[in-house]
Image 1 (spheres, rainbow, N blue to C red):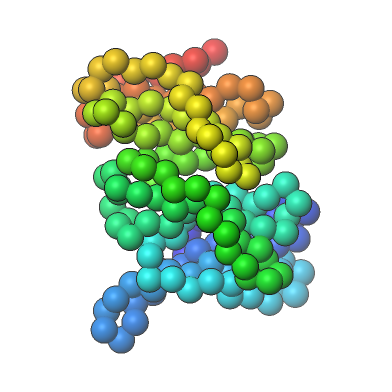
Image 2: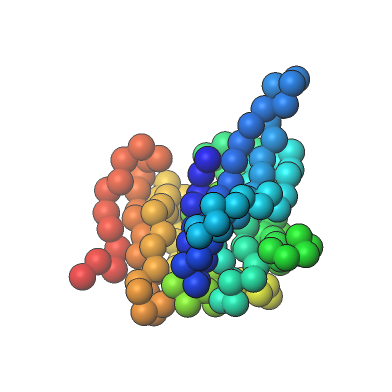
Length: 178
């Protein structure tokens, strides 16, 4: 079980699971539990890795990412998806190229996504509408040895905090920390 997320109304929790089928092949799922009735509703089963990003503003949809490769490294493509709870209809929001799976975060107001993408051998922070559209680069990293990590939104949605590091295993500096 992973990625537990409270619904905006506080009455449900969405979470993802990973199991293996009889052949040992991973199967990923998304489920929602009603906290009052304790009833669990399975919404989705996939062969691709799934990570929940957040609930939509309405609380009727989940935003998630999916990739063929679930490694911590850089998958070539990450699908950003919108899953409707009632109908189980899934819509692709966008395809993110060279984006770190664990460095995609939804703003507290659920309107904006921030993510780190490694394009042209450099990490940078990008933002885009949670509904889709063009991504906008908000950093200008010129050092291919510098990695960005640990994105976090401020509670007022106005700032994004992140770490800068020269190795994956060593955090060396926090930026915009007050």
